[in-house]
Amino acid sequence: MGASHPKVSVIMNCLNGEKYLRGAIESVYAQTYPHWEIILLDNASIDSTPEIVKSFDQRLRYFRNEKTVPLGQARNQALQHVSGELIGFLDSDDLWLPNKLEKQVPLFQHSPSVGLVFSDTVLRFREEGRSTTYFLNHGYRPPRGRIFSALLKHYSIPMLTVLVRATALKSLSQWFDDRYQVCDDFDFFLRLAYDWECDYADEPLASCLIHGEAATARLHRLGPMEMAMTLDKFRSGYPGFEKKYSREIADMGRQIAYKQGLSYWRDGKKAEARAQFLRYPTSLKSVAAYCTTALPHEWVDGLRQWMKKKTH
Image 1 (spheres, helix red, strand yellow):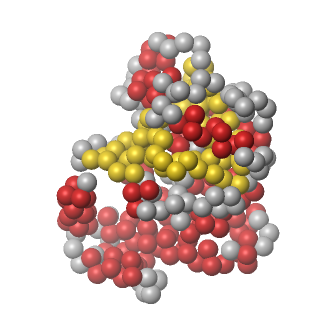
Image 2 (cartoon, helix red, strand yellow):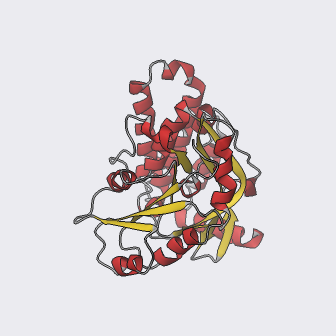
Image 3 (cartoon, one colour):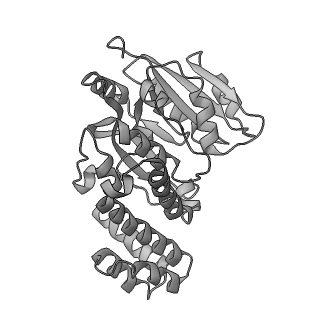
């Protein structure tokens, strides 16, 4: 990396995001670290996105697709236009806290092997009127350095908090895989962490809005399938992966089965949900989930949300 004030290219992808877009853009303009540009790829929006973008200055570089393409493909298109030594990601309904770049950019100076830096994030639940943090609230501290193995056991990288070294990006044979609809960031950052060190700022530096319109809420069925697809990519593309990371693969298998069980339960498929939970009968989490499938998912989820409101 060059000087002590490297330029950050901020990737923003937007599809009919007029409701939150201005706030997201303004959160970049409010950064205390001044060396940045925004690359905004409009994925053929039919709302007021172009007008919102045109109200900002030349630090926001605007590109537009004539037709909507998969999000992974749109992210890759935006990445082709970056000029910074570091790259960040911000979706149109998320926000950066003003000191995000100021806190994260110096972490790349510690070692040229650091390819990815992230932080905690505040999760804002629109319908419930509450907020919490992603991992610090639960007492979790991610490891630093070569954390690929740890990420297989406990994935802890919120995309909106990430900065990536441009040379690390260029080292990948594939950027975002456009076959994914939910876990494209999971796949992308795992492949970065396989070859590069990671670091993080031990505080929330971004704010993520959780709402019913979010892809992870609409497409919950695809999450477990796409996680399994990533595992298969590592098995086929990384020699010795299965032998070296056998324990971690088993841990991820339990995670995938649990998530698949929850998805089935959410869809009212109790028999299929129980079958997934029983794949790992020694897991207390899976056994507890198996027992609760006697009740409708919406009842249990409503109780869980009520308890969270009482504790926040």
